[in-house]
Length: 218
Image (cartoon, rainbow, N blue to C red; front, side, top):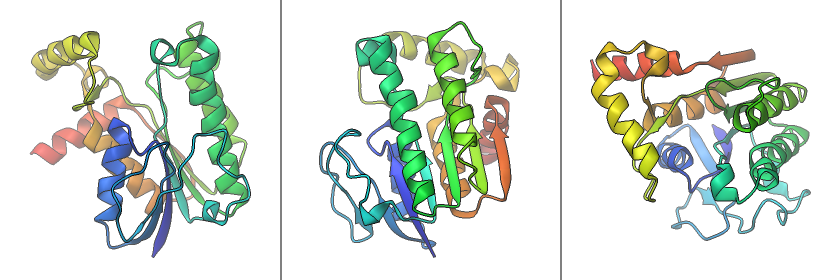
């Protein structure tokens, strides 16, 4: 039986992870800090606060596995510094705290093209946080690098909606790496890695996600 920590439970992928985890008999408890309360559930522990206000010594950091589905954009964060605070600093703080408390498995949502040497802020930040989390030496680390996420975000993102439509229409003729990454598939892969991920570091690419999603539809 497994206790899971979930960062980013109110996002597109994180919400999917939360629903799957609460329905999974292998999961005894989900610890999911959020700024606003989540709907109550007998197996959900929902500390309230943002990244800066969460107590570093709280006993609920002690879990078996963790999923980090945190992510924002520079536009939404308001600045490059704000974006980095979420996608690097908060991600790394979560990883360090659950590792210090004994977590053995960590599943991280990154991005296609993540590279610490990239000249682009988004992919460079993703690559830098991947490298930093690797240095924490989790016995089992799974890094997912999806492409454009498919799913209902519940917010107005016209460019993403346009690209989603284009990629869905063109999907059958595109290589797997360029296809939509369904958020539901990404969520399922993250949760499985946090529950039963094998030893070592595992990279799941956007092409892998597309193939797995296609198998689920067949």
